[in-house]
Image 1 (cartoon, rainbow, N blue to C red):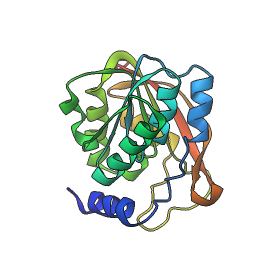
Image 2 (image 1 turned 30 degrees about the vertical axis):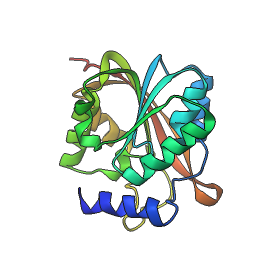
Image 3 (image 1 turned 180 degrees about the vertical axis):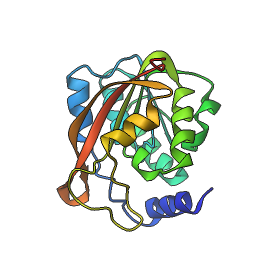
Image 4 (image 1 turned 90 degrees about the vertical axis):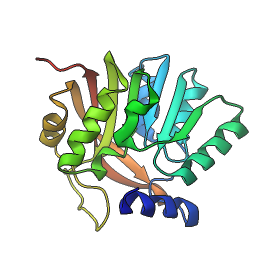
Amino acid sequence: MSLRNIFFDLWYRLGKPDWDIDQPQPDLIAAASGRVIRGPTVLDVGCGKGDNAIYLAERGFKVTGVDVSKAAIVFAKRKALAAGLDVEFMALDAFQLGKLGRRFDTVIDYGLFHQFDGEERSRYVNSLRDVCKHGGLLLLQCFSDQGGRAEWFGPRLISQDAIRVSFASEFQIEWIRPATYKTNGNKLYPAWLALMTCGSAS
């Protein structure tokens, strides 16, 4: 496990990460209401304590959530149990999604991609390809370069061009739209919301 992943796991165990808001991201709610998410199967990559996954399960999707933090997965399982929902949660590195041995109709990433840079992005995109059905959907939200500033050890600010370049080899970009990422204390940050189809245009 990398130092970054150890740090995140300790943060879950000892405190409350900035992205842990005890509710689904507002743009996920809007996407589900707007029928952007295709089912029945959904994979939530970097699920944290499971709020996005649980929200989708409440709406009838068959959801699997994965996160590198074992502590986060423990919290997620407890939340699903308390809600009486059958959500599959497991600890898994986002670069090794192929170990799941199956593909999903929709894969969502709300706040993980912007943690990666350089060669990590290529590894992550390939990992996402391994679990997205051909013609399936990837719905991704990341911090935007349109306003704000990057903080030390915080998420990178991502441009639209960076999204397009990173995913062009394995996904077709349907659209990229301005969005808002919510963190603790009701802080709102500029973000991009991107919808992609698995399978390159070439």
